[in-house]
Length: 149
Length: 234
Image (cartoon, rainbow over all chains, first blue to last red; front, side):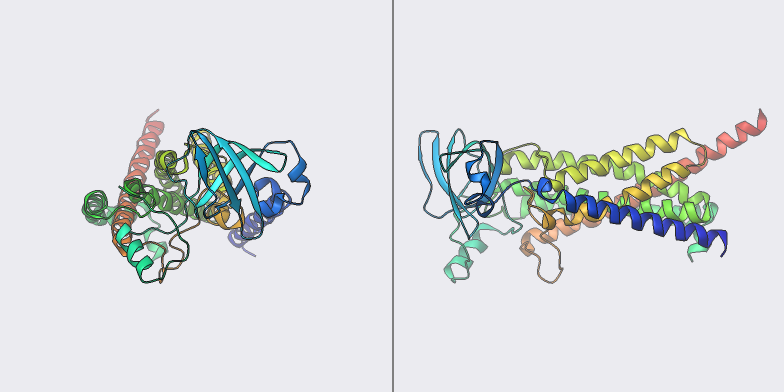
């Protein structure tokens, strides 16, 4: 084998091993790499009764949101389980029923008490008129509220 | 063709010929894309006017990864063939890539505040992009400190493992960052009215990236030649 081929082989091997090592490390730390837990990870597991702070993520359940002043109550769902959330403070502009949300906080008697709310948005982008037309034609998957200028 | 242009003098001649066209293309496409994106494209049904940051943020993100792919490829070629031009290309792409990554992080942060409600979170996507920025900086610092550039090239090569992590972080883990809108060109999740200015901006930034990188190769090449001549006279 020529030295040049030898070097190429070394490079391929090194990158492959580094990749495999990274993949195994990331796999081992799978749970720690998650930015948030979904309600199904919480309801009925030890997280439900733990006092440590963590992040909850999911969709805001339709019709579950109510607020008095800066005290907000809503439910977060992942399709499987539902968890009630209580939050006192200002909501981000993109917070909507049917849209994604991430809450930082802890569990208190079966309710997730949040001290920070982040709004998640999905990968769909379209003009408001198109969203309206889709809705009128009945091609709308979720009953999302929309941006109103 | 590859070995033909592996000669720096020939590469610089190619650069002289291509450069003006690349710059023209960059200015035209970026100008048209930004004007279209800022003034003529519709707002988004959820985000409203804020969505216009996308026309800068997404091209910056794409090109920052494009540059790293070239940095890693050049580093591999340099390690295998020990060719001067591969080393120069690696250095050029590292400099341009570092700036693009920084711009991606800054525009992303400015977009994150009004939409998510935060400037920064340590989720897998944002953290892996920040890691790429540090890799660029580390490569540049290491390259400046050694004569041969071998150790820097090895670092750049190992850092390439981070590229698929960036790309798939939004699919592998729960992240605040949304998944890719354009994974298949046949049915992107972006309406054409918003997609066209985005593609124009991306094309323009690609031309600008290539133009800048080629200019850096020439600068580094001339700098090295001056240094060599000075060394001979001493």
